[in-house]
Image 1 (cartoon, rainbow, N blue to C red):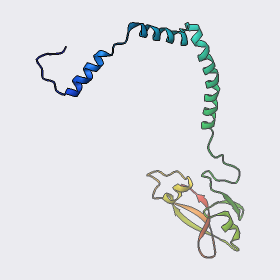
Image 2 (cartoon, rainbow, N blue to C red; image 1 turned 60 degrees about the horizontal axis):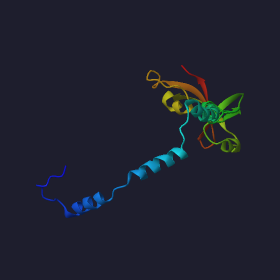
Image 3 (cartoon, one colour; image 1 turned 60 degrees about the vertical axis):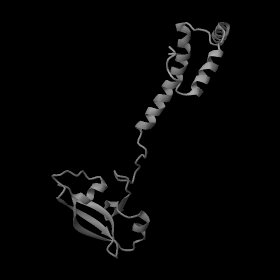
Image 4 (cartoon, helix red, strand yellow; image 1 turned 180 degrees about the horizontal axis):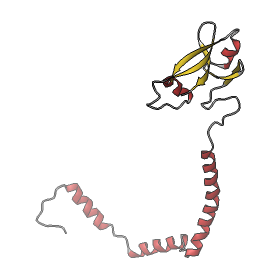
Length: 161
């Protein structure tokens, strides 16, 4: 492979090649290494390899089932007194209202008023009401629980078209 007519590109590479040529590992070293490896890692028959896989499967299958069960459960289970979107429900005037403010604020209000109003469908999307392009411009009749200062505290939908 060496071309005697070529000029050396780098004398350091030539020195490295010359030193590497002097290092010649005897064949007995390679044979000894292969034998030592074979003693440390004996070959297994196909049926011996299955035993380890069986234990891995026995441990991995239940772990996978538990993980699938945990991921299939909702992260936060709704409990009684909560609306579908996780907002608390307030019982006032013979009906349930969806709380728009904190329960403490609603309870502290001495005399909240109930006002009938129309609410645009687009503002109800945050409460979980389905919104489509057809009904996005519509309005819904609702009753609002309002504080003395005019701040809305809770909402109850009267009709959804």
